[in-house]
Image (cartoon, rainbow, N blue to C red; front, top):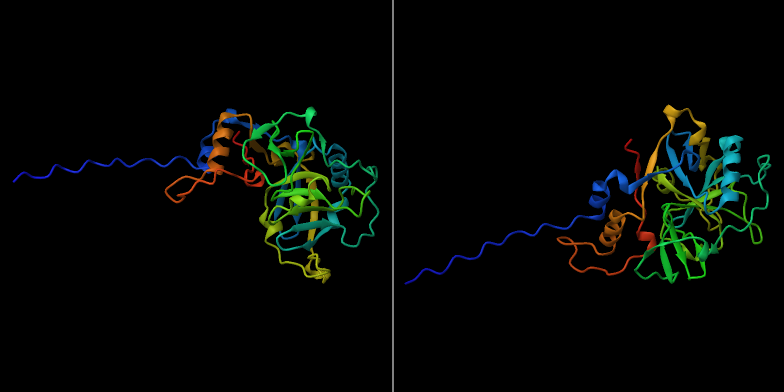
Amino acid sequence: MHSPPPAPVQTPTAAPPTATQIADAAPLSAWAAIADDDLMLIDFADGKRVAIWLASGFAPVHVANMRRIARAGWWNDASVYRVQDNYVTQWGDATEAKPPAAGIALTPPPEYEWPAAGRSIVLNRYRDAYASVTGFSADGWPLAGDGKQQWLPHCYGMVGVARNLAPDTGTGGDLYTVIGHAPRHLDRNIALVGRVIEGMGALSALPRGTGGGLGLYEDPAQRVPIIRVTIASDLPGAERPHFDYMKPTSPDFARYLEARANRAPPFFTVPAHAVDLCNLPVPVRAAKR
């Protein structure tokens, strides 16, 4: 009898890199610095800190207000006073009685959208439920649009300006960040002014409020005191944190996007061939300089 031929040796196929691995391995040339003047730091009484990247190129009047409010110390006795589950955390003057900071624009324009012809976009080829065109600005911001207009989307961690009924646009003294499923119905109705890039847990992991069906803290003792809000450029050089974002124009970002859209084996067995714009956060990291 003849022995059966030996079975062919199966060479394991290496798993393709994950989105996180692509970002971690991206060279320095794939990253760009966030300007110190576009970095706002919130320090809480419990020692936690939140870093917000300011979208000064998209909401310049509101962001200018926020810089003035911070430099005036207006937020130094403010607090987080609203935490609505799967929606937003909000902070500012819970009493609504404090006079506005001096020198700010009391009626900013509605910085909600702008002509698409005025700003280029690195396209995301996957479909989106709220916009026919989505992608990213060259300076690292997610963009939604319809071919005629563009706007920033309400993704997790984005920071918006609380306001009363239109035509009020809010001054920037009261702000919120998205802590749940992206409420994209708010797009083009409220000014978005930034993104939380560090310390999100200090805002998203707070006890939920119960007041008014809006997550307001009914007991003032529940409010989370803010002791200081600072623009990083106002700190001594040695005390400034520095962050970089991955450039959407880089080849590494294109690979990152595809890896986010189509998760690979061995865990994933069915690729999605789709990805919501809000599931494509532009990577941000502490600067490696």
